[in-house]
Amino acid sequence: MLERNLEEKGFEMTYVDEVFDWVKEKNPGEKEFHQAVKEVLESLEPAIEKHPELKKHKMLERIVEPERQLMFRVPWQDDQGEIHVNRGFRVQFNSAIGPYKGGLRFHPSVYLGIIKFLGFEQVFKNALTGLAMGGGKGGSDFDPKGKSDIEVMRFCQSFMQELFRHIGPDCDVPAGDIGVGGREIGYLFGQYRKIMNQFHAGVLTGKGLDYGGSLIRPEATGYGCTYFVVEMLKDRGLDLKDKVCTVSGSGNVAQYTTEKINQLGGKVVTLSDSNGFIYDPDGVTFGEKFDFFLELKQIRRGRIKEYADKFNVDYYSNKRPWEIKCDIAFPSATQNEIEVNDAQTLIDNGVIAVGEGANMPSTIDAINLFLEAGVAFGPAKAANAGGVATSGLEMSQNSLRLAWEREEVDKRLHGIMVNIHKSARVAAEKYGAPGNLVVGANIAGFMKVARSMMAQGLI
Ligand code: NDP
Image (cartoon, rainbow, N blue to C red; front, side, top):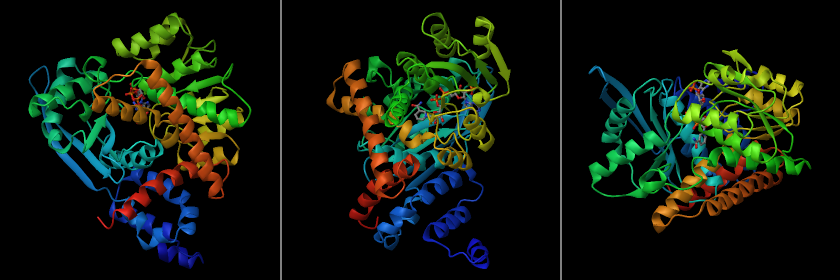
């Protein structure tokens, strides 16, 4: 159909168009997956041209098809004794360069299309880290919000009752994502250990420090994203000092992005959740404000509005923070939270850089607008790779049965982020798109996985 439309309009169908058309037909209704595939495939055009063997080996068709997709029933009982049934997912996307690796998301919006978009992105992100990790992702449409600890535990146990047979330290290593933090990883690990009667520390990452976790893992995505933005600024002769930053979200990524920005002399003026955002023009500074924020989210699991009530700052209900004038935007909540009109507002207000802490937070049109406007744009699969990279470091420590010091892990994380930025910049230049880190990150990640798949034969 697309082919005919294009031909009628006098366009020639490219290999990328053909594969994208095929993906849409084969995966109906999975709009987030289509979006992620489109963004990657379009940026691969220069690589396809330069390496004809990619088409010969049908690398695009092979790379967009997960190696395995699992869907399962997760029954659990609430505190009133009522029975609920949720759906569990694990998509094992690609293991050409290492065991499947990627987080679990518990959120009511989860369905196969979300898990596949996240798994697909994860393949390239993990390749970019330089560590031996394939890509996968999983989760459930379970909503942990408002549930008691015991209900969350029952759900996690039931989820693991099925998942355990598909994972393992050398096979598939899940971690956290939206709705899955230290508490959930603890319950999941406990159930896995009980079923297996084995202490396989490396089967999950994001564990507590007392039982195999790594220092800096909770901080890693936010710290890493900030390090990445610092590298982009350096290329322009700038730094973070005194820069006004808007951060969205108030979960794991937003918390540690805020911490690192503060440490490096920037000022975070917004935080948000799915109900609205707070605007604190003086910044979420260290001391009383930052401590209150962490306690509110990590211990009391409250809503961000309480920050506005406590410190008497503005709260905007049902809005995103992008209308606030800033130098740097750090979208750190969820997918498609920066649409084209938000991007235009940010540009009109003089934004100089965007660091994607969340996965796919900007729509394709928004990304194109940023790039056209010359904004330094750090795409998610590069900018937020610090989390999975440090998960990789947690796996290494588990294998060595050692625990590195905080400084050691942070130094390695920093080195990895500097390298990811460099690889993306170098690939962008090599493939004729200097400064375009979307093209650079996609091609650098893709080529590593594609080369490995070709070397390993048709499997
Ligand atoms: P958390 O669950 O800790 O926090 C998520 C935050 O985003 C919450 O403030 C939440 O608000 C908000 N949010 C979630 N869904 C929506 C929505 N539909 N609309 C508006 N706000 C929303 O998750 P993380 O901080 O771990 O993850 C945030 C993003 O970062 C995700 O895109 C994730 O995939 C990505 N990421 C996370 C990594 C990690 O190491 N944790 C690694 C790499 C990427 P509310 O409480 O109202 O739901």
